[in-house]
Length: 54
Image (tube, rainbow, N blue to C red; front, side, top):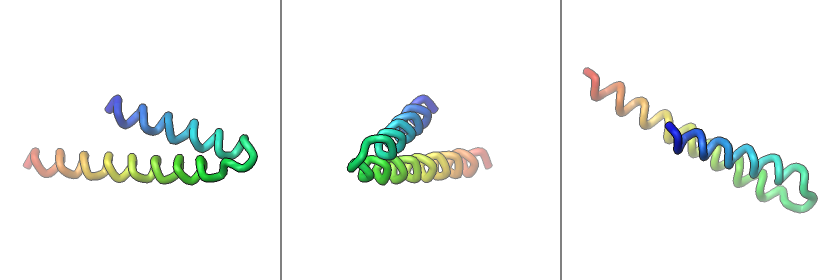
């Protein structure tokens, strides 16, 4: 869970820097992609845990 929160914080920071700093829109894109990858990771992990309980 710590890894998930750390990656979410990094994605938010990259997104903010990408919006604020002119010419660094690619950082916003990287932040969004990182956030999406993190949510997918959480979904796969919780689906795997839910399956193992049965």
